Image 1 (cartoon, helix red, strand yellow):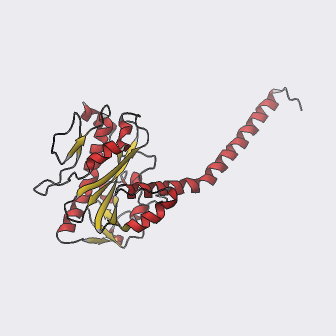
Image 2 (cartoon, helix red, strand yellow):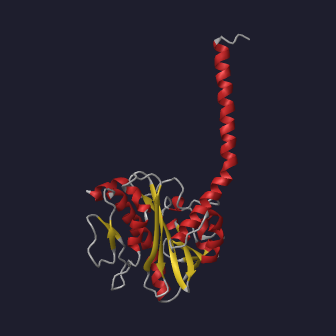
Length: 280
């Protein structure tokens, strides 16, 4: 065979591409279970992290199971789905928020810690450069629903600016903030550009230089917690009203591989352009 011919060069190149492609595909398939396991563990760490519990990857599942006592699936009207064949952990928010509003389902985690009950609400939105997500833990023991803890993270926000949402300094501002005003009306917590007024129980300082990401956090919190308000009000008054799972539309679309419910790469429905307008 003439190794200096064009046919040999093209043939060798094609064979090399095929071999390398097969190796990469095999590696991707082989590593997928490990990647899914890592995403699942990270999700557990984030959920329990919202109530101030830290865990190594090796400890995450044990601590998650010891702290999270119940998982609920809610409809977009805030009703508890009774008899669902899946758990809150199985819900992939990145897929749910792409459905029509009436078909969406929302996860809620209930934690018991130091004889107190906490509702942990997962949320997902969009920052300047990509998805942002988080968990807000509300103290339900006194039916006031003040924030006990918050965890936020992002995929690709700017270091030193929007990426600061995952810092302790930003997240700890949410502690003890309220989601209802004195009249019992829903009043979402907002990150305020230029600084929050002293004593404001519904606002925190926005990220300096990260206005669009801060607006994304605001939109994510407002939109998500609003879904849960009917549930919270029922919880404090008449108890929980449930809806049979068979009456829930599109229940079969729950992802069986939803470990990355809030860390999957697909974006939220919130529009970046609207956030940019808000930032002006």
